[in-house]
Image (cartoon, rainbow, N blue to C red):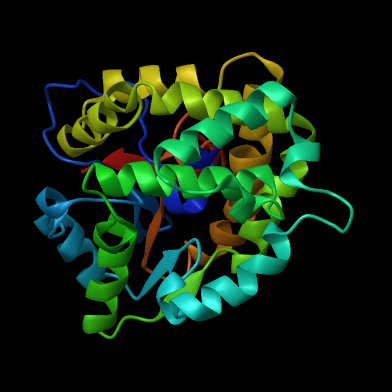
Length: 292
């Protein structure tokens, strides 16, 4: 279940440090300070439903007070067709390979049965890498549950920032995000197996977590992080590739800028916690990080 929830477009939730779950009742917004300069850090949910429409007032205020809004990638710059054109080269298998050759017979059969129940022929995906197929699966399930990226917090932040004429900065490129999954191809079967685990209990692995994010329920979010990035080979490798490596680059890029400008930084919420998360890394670089 873990793979695609770690991916930029569907990363879900986070916990942070030692704050009481009863002292806050809204998604966590953090103040970042050093040398008299104040910025903001906010963990986002990349998909949402109608109940999540509208940013919290403190988030709007923080964006308005900032000089620039920083996101992972400004996907609103790309049309759906442009996104498809730019992503397809990364999603396609190399000549001579097929989805069937990349998976065990058992996992390929599971996929075939899954799509057959939805009246979709698995042959449509024969040329795609397993992670691309899993993205399709999760998108289907999220849509069935009433969620889409159009109502995700990231797009709402971008829309509000652009309405306020705030410059938009990016931490990485769309292509870098596409390349991440290629680093996990040796574990294709584990990715498929965990995706099916998630789909078998979408209430626990998605709906309950969105509720926890809304309420700022740090205990539930903390439990989810630890469960997602467990000690098996896949958990450790995916945490390294999708979170730790990127966090390290982002902190290096942001540390100097945060002392010179008021920034509003919005990233997938799982990038915030734990010893390699943005909060502890910024604190280690001399920043004071507190929850508002």
